[in-house]
Image (tube, rainbow, N blue to C red; front, side):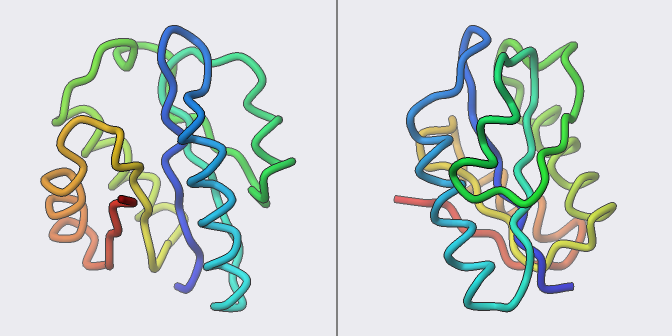
Length: 119
């Protein structure tokens, strides 16, 4: 239960710069923990495999439908489900995401793990 799950944020089908930065950060943390870094992609995004270049051991797609516009409940549900399925010990949410701390708190309560918003 040491693995790290990172949300790779996107907009209009393209990864935001923060997505690559947060994956790199997640990989460094995973290496320190002796764990793997998993990237989670929500929505329709081109080039998800590119996240491996930035350190993701694996890329998981949480679905294309319903994520093109931000909805905190949908994001929380999808991230919590991925964290639970992967038995992640840490979830990293980019600070650029709308309301990352609230989402992190809700995920932490659902699956009892630590969540970190980058800042």
